[in-house]
Image 1 (cartoon, protein in one colour):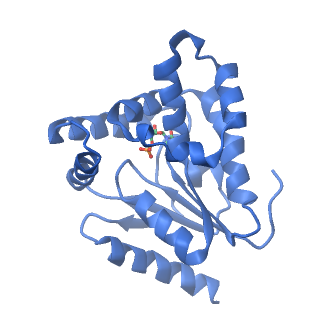
Image 2 (cartoon, rainbow, N blue to C red; image 1 turned 135 degrees about the vertical axis):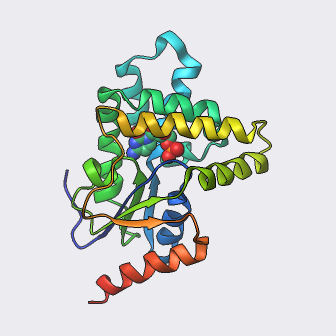
Length: 218
Ligand code: C5P
């Protein structure tokens, strides 16, 4: 993969609903970076699996990902719990992870010239996708706080789901994402831990921003 020189690369790994997406968006805006929510790619593939059934093969997925545009990932239907669960099932498949890799690394290393760099969040961004990122953050929060946040988001989207179901779904995904063979979620030694359990969005952003500015201004 060719790499644009002198760009800022930010890699974030986190379990679901820990606030990584919120922070990544704020960082993208503040530092003028391309933002890629990699979970949305797995959700897009998960939705394809739900919709297409037996047509769903690796070559079918590859064709779809080769044609995929960033704005496909903004589709609100990707936000459902059903799609999230299917995303974490198909994400165990090594061939699917390999198909997604090229798209992710292109965003990370060759962001359009109007951006100063990129910020990607997901489960294997630090460990596999952008191993040499300039900044590496592992963002987490307690299961209870994550479930509360996700439940509130579902409510705002008018999705009918109970708090209990949200907890259950996050538990299942945490387990699958951490214990799978390929690209499991884990914190590496060099990544900076940000625990958002007791931090507001703003406090969390200020903390990350300060870490980045210190290095960038050196
Ligand atoms: O981040 P989000 O909850 O949208 O991700 C949906 C699912 O996609 C996750 O539960 C995980 O299984 C998968 N995923 C992944 N690798 C990534 C990002 C997401 O396996 N880099």
